[in-house]
Structures are given as structure tokens and as C-alpha cells.
Amino acid sequence: MEHHKGFLNWMFRSRKTGRITLAQLPNWQLVVWAVASAVMWLGHPQGRARDVLVVIASAALALWAGDEVVRGVNPFRRVMGVVVLAWLVFSRVRLG
Image (cartoon, rainbow, N blue to C red; front, side):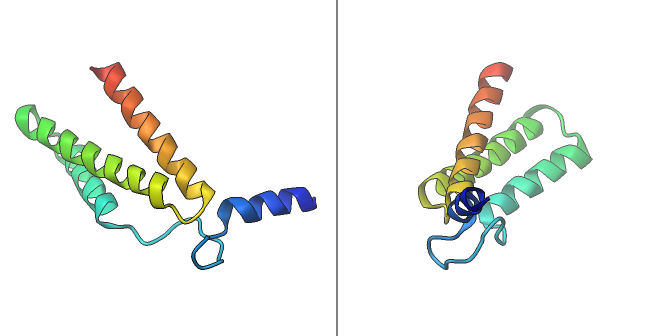
């Protein structure tokens, strides 16, 4: 049991504050991604407008994920950044 506690402590403890960190207030990249995604989901834009929103949402999410990989406060946040970047690359390759 102590091993699991040590792993969880290592995985989720902030290297900056020493506190357990799962989520933080969204930064501007996540806000931009959420707004662009909501507009696509609610408005169903077509053509060039949709293409622009996809680029904006993808770029914002990639910037957020890259920042988490480089500056994430704990391994969980860094792994989350890697997973999101991998998903973005996979979805772009798959969708063309």
C-alpha cells in the first residue's frame, strides 16, 4: 500500500507548491480551444469558417499540451500533455 501511496504522491504532487494538483484554472489556450469548440458544436459552421475554427481550436490545444509537457507542475500534467499532443497528431493524420 505504501508503494501505491508513494507513486500517487510522486505523480500528482506539484513540484512548485508541494500540493496535490489534478486541475488548475484554465489558461488562455484552453479558453480559446473551448470557445472555438463550442462554436463548432453549437453553430455547425460550414466551409472556410469551420476550417478556421478547427485550426484555431487545434493550435490552442497544441500550445496548451506543449506547455504542459515542458512546464507541467507534476508528471500527471506532463503525461496529459503528451497524450493530448499524440491525439492531435493521430487525429490529423487519420483525417488528412
